[in-house]
Image (cartoon, rainbow over all chains, first blue to last red):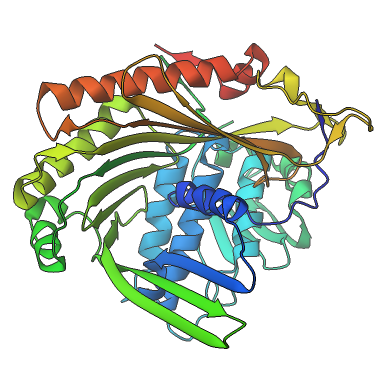
Length: 192
Length: 246
């Protein structure tokens, strides 16, 4: 049979760790007979007991887990640990916006797109974005993945001369990153 | 054999028994040092809500079933309820030996403290998501990837926009059954079409809560699960998993 991914699928991706329960609920709803005007709903959750930071961390770890098979080995576990440390309740600045799911998606798509084999250092700038940084000696690259789904970057790169080349680029689609970085020989950061 | 990029979204071992433990007893299990690597347990609350429109009645009931806990990096989760223990490994999945050892070592303390002698049901469930690259946005032919076919009415354009299928069958091993779910599912990344392949192998007979009978049953269930997985897929699908490690 021919399957057309219409991109209009109703629903959200399954969350790893809870997918089995979500699948069961879905089929339970299909099988349930709705008799006259009587409705019954059951839900089981431990999510309600979390703080907003914990709930967002759970969501982020789920999104990373969701695409882990498309990342180099060890990336997903490492990133999940990094975000857990970044979002530690005691270290998190309460005035900062929580990391936006769309910024995180841009970050993950960006990682896959640039085909890096080196995990970046991560951070956030308090407005929901994800900052990814690679440093190799004096060569530095920082990409900021924004809530808009775009990415901006700044870099310092020593190529043939003793003078470094520096660049700062305004937000662009993540799909452009590889092309934009190519003249700066990004293998120094990405181990590709 | 292990696929380098196994499409496993989550692996679950689910053990259920008939006698009911109290919340205090569950707390005493989770206070053991063996659970110290997990974050603080969160209560698992079930809320039943009913609406009777004819009589204008709304009722709800709230009950704590047990606790849920997760590692700090979110890689593993455990759920301990009055009559069940569930261990979940989220993607990325490593290998069976590690997964089974983690689950059964925690289970050992659970059954010892709660004095569970036998399980009335054991479930081994692997939720897989097959991510298929789209070429120039063209549709995929599912027969190229999965061996389960849809043979319904074809008085149409011959195109599937969504499907969901769940089949429950006994295996050829006494007391072991399986539920197979095959469905389209949203893809987490652009440029992919995804198919869900959820395999739940479960027992319908009493199994000792420890010892060779338990371990032998788990090995048998794993073997059945692997066979079902392989039988559902084509070589073209397997080629998406980055090759194998022996």
